Image 1 (tube, helix red, strand yellow):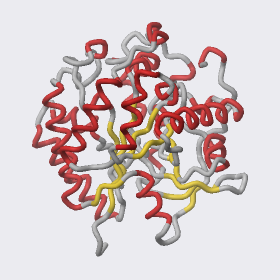
Image 2 (cartoon, one colour):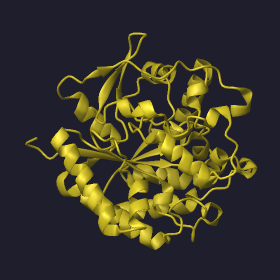
Image 3 (cartoon, rainbow, N blue to C red):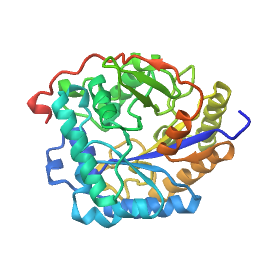
Image 4 (cartoon, helix red, strand yellow):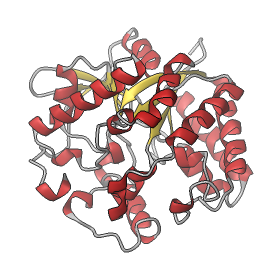
Length: 333
């Protein structure tokens, strides 16, 4: 490419209660939150590196009065908001069409009410998606979906999660495909267009993995490597970006709140992988990673990336390969 390739950056605003819910901790119903502390800190950190990104917001959190100022500041400080569902359940693929429609609209309305911006993109919790979900998004004129993670390592990540952060967690039916399946690695690492069977289409911007080998390199993986060697972590990031450039893939780089907060700040999640790193250290690594991304790429929001992709040559088209969704069991709600 003669121009600098783009790199979209996004952060899934998963709150404390949502981590507890996925793990099966009954206390999640109390909705404990770290967002009033996390969001201002994250915005200040992004200001330090001069970047504007997309925050995928959970609809319920947008209805909480104590979050209102921080949520509104996402827009006033130049960022974008996306839809991350209303209840943050990692089994959206089990939802019926009616449940999906309600989930999307409730989140949309809540996010727009507090930020003044209607989301134009969606990311499913835990990379959960279905063709029915894509049809609902296309029918509501979403610009893009960003729910897929094309990697062969989903089953390994799931096993590691159950052995560490999810130790003792019930392996219920809705959690049996948490973080995806092996066949997820068969999908492209770069953007493409879903050719839906009802005649609609929707742009997909996957969470980028290394083309060919499909190994993830979003920031949570870099932190895992950095606990062994910072040189290894950032060498891996630079190598991944080099392979993306050679393959013509513009990366979409994913972040999470626990990428910036350690167990010293979120004691309830100290058992999660990487939470033994202090928050100050995580933020140093975070800023260094974003600066590396900007060395040979132009960082942009997800919507800016999607619009640029749409304005270029014709995209490859792909028929959704996931099994058709079935109605969610009442226990999953």
